[in-house]
Image (cartoon, rainbow, N blue to C red):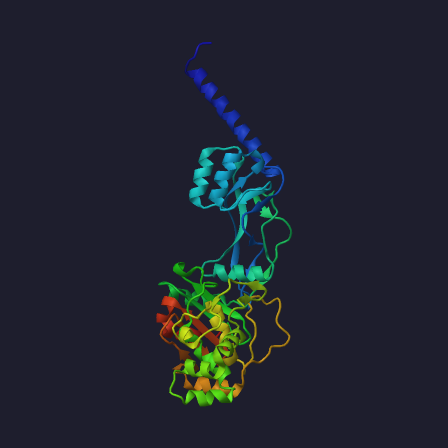
Length: 399
């Protein structure tokens, strides 16, 4: 056969048509059956549906994004070992939908290996300004997260079953307004009278702020004093010239001090049904260690909960981020009169029509209380420098 310009053009056109037909067949097969037979499971739990904030504001949206489908049955033992190190988890027999980052996506896709395929996954993600940590906390506490099975439908892997909607106590507008306050680091949390988590923001350097323990130091003195003033022995100890914490310890003893810290919720690390990482609490707890920030390292949420008796006449509700369940009865742990005495000694700041009590000792925490409105804010780390700005936002939005 002699080759000329017409032959080359005709051959090129035929080749192009054949490639197009082959691509169409592949796409049809993918849309019909997916890149592999059978379902897949993700490495970690994903949102199983939309998440709503207070006032009916949706806090999530569904997007399709690149992922990698890993089929262990088609991989060699050495490749499984390499993938397990990259994923941070050993491979079993089930197909894995790996929501890898852009770097791993490019690396493994470029290898063109059998058993690793680029795919699309339909996932729920936070809207701009919404806290991903709070969204996942609400979803986990409501059981609205899942690893799978993921099945191929409408050109992407999607979680099987009906979407599970989650309704939360989170005020999306307030959360968005507070976000700039933690840009240098740290965290801000706002909690309502009945333990409802209204807002929470953690900067990139404080991604673990929901559960990361930090030394409390004198930040826990007001709630401890609220419990202590119910005992006559404390009044006598306070006249002895010692520091307040030392006086409380003298009246209670180290065992009593530790029991009172536990009564304020330190060590129970829960939001709804979700258990967070346990804080570090020395046992027995000494006043000197506590004052120096060495004996108690709670999470910011635990600090926030310890102040809840000041908002609701001594009652001590559990923290909640989902509206699905609320406790029928909430016990009181401190007398209203004792708490009023403590509040009267805290610095007062008035912004507009709102009156705040502010406790900002040297250390990693600042606490803002608005008892009449029934709301409090806890700032942690570098965010404490913006305490007054947080007051202004709370006064403007009155959550």
